[in-house]
Amino acid sequence: MSFTTNHPASREQAKVMNRFDITKRMVFRLHHDEAVIGGIGYTNFDLWAAGRRPQNFYMLGSMGLAVPIALGVALAQPHRKVIALEGDGSILMQLGSLATIAGRRQKNLAVVVMDNGTYQITGGQLTSTELGADIVAIARGAGIVQSAWAADEGAFEELIDLALREDGPWLIGCRIDKEKPAETTERDPPRIRDQFMRGLGVKK
Amino acid sequence: MDEEASGRNWHEIVVDVLKRHDVRLTTYVPDNVLRPLIDAVHADPFFTAFSCAREEEAVGIISGAWMGGLRGIVLMQTSGFATLPNAIASLAVPFQIPVLMMVSERGTLGEFNIGQSLVAKTMRPVLAALAVEHHTMSRLDEVEFILDRSITQAVATQAPCVFILSPLLTGGKVFAK
Image (cartoon, rainbow over all chains, first blue to last red; front, side, top):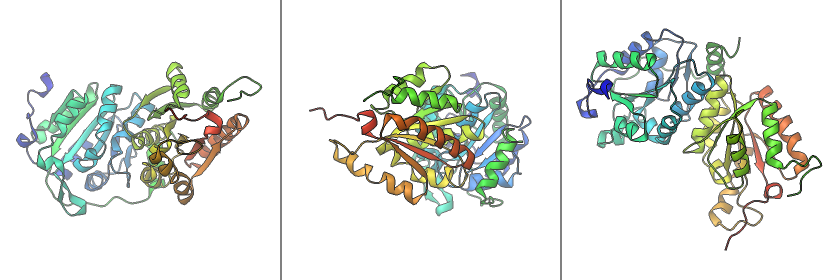
């Protein structure tokens, strides 16, 4: 695949980036009211800190369900691009969902995985990615052909632009550091859901 | 099972009521008793239907679809429901999302698998503990009323609802020696 030629072949070769920095870079590149589903933990907190958007949904619990929720939004609104933002621990919980979105050939869906090899919020216990599991390779094996590691920040921006422009499904793997998140998401589920539905134009 | 005066069986009634309420998306982990319903939603272009790896995933998809303006229902069997308390308690209930779920009841009235009979005993206590609206459908003449009224209520009150298909209605799964 030509799009992967400039990207590292494995997790070990990808640069370790800062989660808040690349989350901000991703949000900055959203220009068409794309929906973003933030999985739990620090990934979620940094999405919140990167600037509230009415098209962002912030999960609180239900670990592992960012990809399924994103698929549901993508099915409901096929003309809107939808991004699922997950951590390595979360995606490991629901690997079957990668096979599901591959099987659906869901064009308007991209998955971004923030991988620091740890369950950071619970004390830094190792996940399997630190022990050799490669999420991008797993995604390809599940049938998401367009899966790649971001070599560095510039490559990450290129991959995001590509995923927003071209048909998916996509999976972008990001190796990230263990910095604390910039803020904490406000835990108000009905408000989060209501604002998201208004952001998607479902409620007026 | 006996057919009502109109000659429709339970799964035909379910399809009709889902259509009336514009419930277009069906995600499921398959079950033998649900097979005619699953076959029907696959055969009808009104519906988008596909299987998921896990029931939690199916609930996540229906939740996202609702927020995006598309109504859906999850189909599963009793053992699959037992994997769902966290998704219901941390997604559907607190975010006020009317996830519709239909459970083919195993574990009772002639069950032959001890695992099914044990896990089935957890279902109603979990639903009661979470205060989730649920109805057991045992007779053909009550299927339409329960489903129709409860979908209306789920949407109006922004709350999930579970429909349990009793073997009294479906015939259940028969012990094969």
